[in-house]
Length: 300
Image (tube, rainbow, N blue to C red; front, top):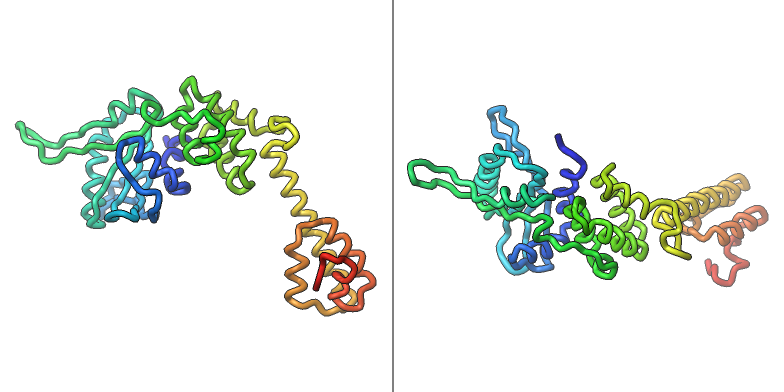
């Protein structure tokens, strides 16, 4: 069964590829910060109906070397079937794309991490035909980011750290640091990480802790929580859009022509007080440009 945590452990590499360099650094493999990362088809099914699906496959183009493929597998428990399917994934991808292939396995407990490191051999009678060495990241080697400043600088790594350490004693400190960090990020970025952890941590104790941090409480004194800011900003934008529509409707009803430039200016404004002024002027204006005539900061 594919769980939200399983999905999150590999999807974050697709959606936030900036974590690749620090994750490879943890593994002792140098990878430059500058690179191009593209998700490619992860279906490894052949003509015969034996479905094989790799969790995530990325084509990585480092600025300092050759391209390679990175297959990312999220593994929450030991599975003997993976000992043969993982070597297949590597061989299949190398044959199909004619590129070097690395396999990264993401785990959340020590026992699974130790097993997933392999190596996994294919051979008999003292001869090894193929040997697979996965790269493995988990709570033993992935840093627990408990400092708010570090979390603010590397929010994707902090979120990944929270997911990997969800069952460790450090999880409360990790989530507290990330909560403080998100309060200083723009709404789009903070909203992504809030929803990512809400979904992947689910109804676990860590998930409940995260909901408490991000809930409608005065967690950030004088600033409001992430949810409060999202709600307030969304409400304000919705009100501004409605007022802007009213301005244009009044001009249309009075058969006053509106140029594309003025229409765009009105509909993209988010200052509700300014739009209110335009709405009052729309009632008496003889031309659309009159909307901006009485405000020194509004030069048409």
